[in-house]
Length: 550
Image 1 (tube, rainbow, N blue to C red):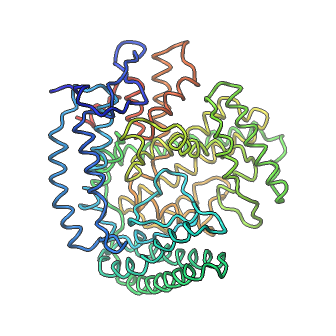
Image 2 (cartoon, rainbow, N blue to C red):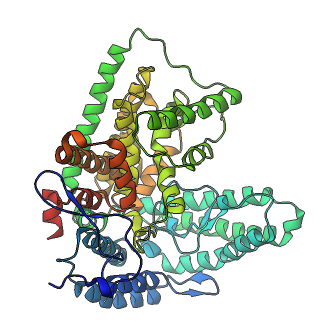
């Protein structure tokens, strides 16, 4: 094995420090310059350009010939990466290698198994009015997304031109999709058609917000809507004959966990863990209800004025709690990152997360750690040229979703809700919901349930009936999970890895462990799979990760 030669590396400097495994605490060791050896960085840049489809007249090419050519050329990239040996590199550089390898494996899996351009009608939805809380929008989508949320009204000329360029590609892309789509997965077709119908509604809603000065853009939106409606009609007519399974199957799922998500467990392991979490959270909820039986029910937000007051107060209280207890180093932009996403009051029936939010708005502000993650990428730019990029295939979801989910229970245990004991009940309901929908996801993956059955299962196992089949949330979540393997389980599997990481560092550091220091390092490592964060911060591979990476 050949160690990295610092003189051959890029001049950029890693943001995070490496660690060297040893007894007790992990000793910090500065990493050599760069995100890895120069050949890894060169490979990474080449691969990132290669994995994108070719584009003609603004339209990405997902035709069978184009995808066959990309799959053939992918073998060359796999061989190039295999020729790079990271064995003697410092740990952060080895981590970079495995991040890059996971992305290559993701493209390989796309071609061998998922083939979203051929199997998944929802892949061709490209118009998005709302911001995702993930660095990369959840799920597989065609190149060329039109992210309307990033523009403010009234539109500038530059914004209108940018939106128009994206919208004008929609008719041609959807025409191409009719030829590309050959898959037989029933749920993918049925719920993909529903997603396409939603795109039509979103196009119309945005057009209605524009005044007469944007006549050309309104005309582009109208043409895109007509093409979207036509595509939805075609999908619905075709869906009658699409009767096959939509899940990738257990064997493929296990490969994806191991090689793309870098989750060192199997489908069977995850089923067992989710059953345990569902049972644990439901049992602890029952004990909390006994403990709080004499307390009044929580007041539910009932007006716009109350909404604004309580949600803003929740941000204030939450940020003060983090600072006063030295849990997290507070950056100037963090408070605003949460307040910007408060939203507005909505009367009438509530979806699941509304039931939580309207009883104690502070609970879901903890899950809003997502906005801290995205803020770090903007305001605290990493000098690591690999980690500062948004990860492909949502392969960082065990870190992003796992930490945001785990943060809810961690803040509860740190005392955030001591003055409002009934809010502890909400945290356990949240855990139960994540476990129930993850089990539905796992049963869909194995083709033991279809999407409707998985949705009904999740609803039946979430306490208090707050996840309802009458709403849109449950089916929307399960539709995402059948498209993106490993996503539905990432919330609790990632939480498991991060809980273990905290335990590892507490054991290594003993009485010198400080949560604020831990989180500073944790944030600095960046958005990569939780299993790799754990390795880098402790200097040791977990036994499961050791086995997986051999």
